[in-house]
Length: 313
Image (cartoon, rainbow, N blue to C red; front, side):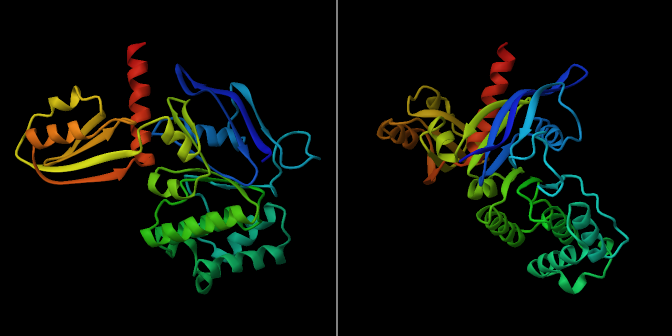
């Protein structure tokens, strides 16, 4: 697939803080690209530089959305943007707000209304189109904000925390909507903290911490460079010692989740027979189950590794 966004060594510094530290990545046409990181990692700063809201101190950002656009900057009609901080007019009827947002993105008023009503119907808000945004629930306001970002059918959509304010049912609805947009030709860059949702839809993931790339690739590629893909969840009684885990070559790491429950991450291609024997000898087990390692597990591990490297420097 062809590259339609190329970010090359961008730097953004606020005083002594390097919010984004020479970050590079490519986004290819027709993919869902997820930008992930803890609070303060540099995600929103990166998104704002992509949107040209703030300028990088160094490095370049180039969009390749059409052959005729030699400036390498997206046109309003080509780009959709859902900001993390919501900003639609609260006291104006919803349909008027959406029509206006469509017009400033290059649509005529008739097409803007038609697209707005199509999206409102899709998200079960058509009967409320003449109400003010302020009377809607937080989740429904988020739906309207989303519509305002994509009603012009952009080639590239940047969605910052698109699942914020949604219950699990609406989260699943928006997973399907985002996949449908991709399948119809919109390339999507999203920033979100709900790892279990990102894992369901992302074609490629970039994990950042302290403004730097700490892991990048497909979910499968990132998993191959992390754990064996398995973990043990062990529930137990009493207050046992866990020092025996530290000297077992089958154990990557372990963490006590809460009282009576421990999570053990396994190394690749190591026999578990010895480990399970030690567990049975040292812990009064009530249950054991095996699960696949999740993107959340990998994310936490990569961030911890990055912190340890920084502390050692």
